[in-house]
Image (tube, rainbow over all chains, first blue to last red; front, side):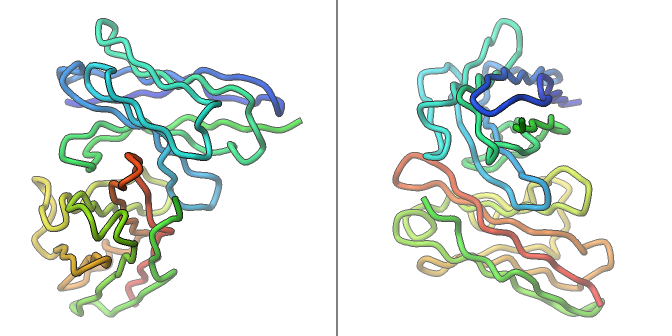
Length: 118
Length: 110
């Protein structure tokens, strides 16, 4: 069974940093591209970042480019999102997702809540 | 990259069909067949319903179908059931090498 488990969320002050993790199991992690998607409270989905299976290809949404860094450790079956210079508008539930089909995320974690507030 | 445009809400009675539109531009929906649709009932995680415009993952009922014409993609749900009530989101790959979601559509089964 495919499992994706996010962790690392919490309350952080504006300008602060946080590192999210996504632990993967039940599939060959190194064979799949992965995404981070976020959802602000009561709002819609917003794509955040993408990393290819071998980390050679990385994309970011314009709203986080230059502040967030996506990475993965295939030996540890883990995906990460380093979030710096956090703003109130970054407050959201952050999901990791596995891309099984082109652009289609067939598996999602349960999400981890990040709250940016003073 | 602006969000894809979806109607805020649609509704239908059990057994009826509804269609949700997703309008983008020639830089996203119109340029790629990497359009996906997700279903998200309240308090749950998004579920992939359609990928690459019109393909259904295993386990998704064939009542759900997708299509695309020009810059607009569509999700059609036929034989509407109470369990279909949820928020629906489209997404697309873009020429900027990013992905973009639609604003979401709330489906109400009357």
